[in-house]
Image (cartoon, rainbow, N blue to C red; front, top):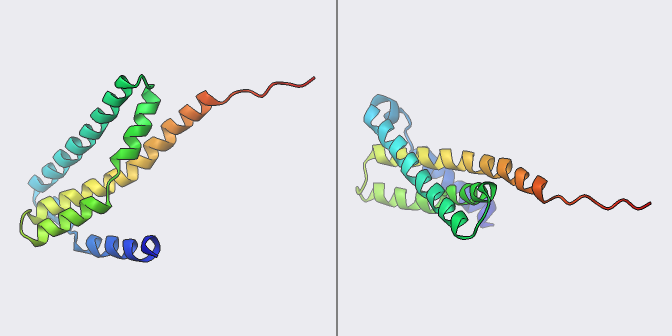
Length: 131
């Protein structure tokens, strides 16, 4: 019930509050959006890279970890919405966070798909031929 009704309704209601025109009319907000994306995605990549070094994983394994942890929508949206309604963040920063959510939710699955296929291809064991 929650996944099929409440979560999509919440995402749509938050998306309606977003005003992407602010990013174009005030170029500093676009810079904030880029900084938020680079900082958050960079931190997730660094964490996946450190874990891969500690546990001796391959680069493809690290990229799958990165792709799986990069996408964050639910909690980020709730915090951003609360912060905007409490006047803790500006409308520009709220929209920058919305851009971050969209970018990470679109690129995370693509990264997992690409590097997951590499891992699957590497782990395929040929079946022995019976003669």
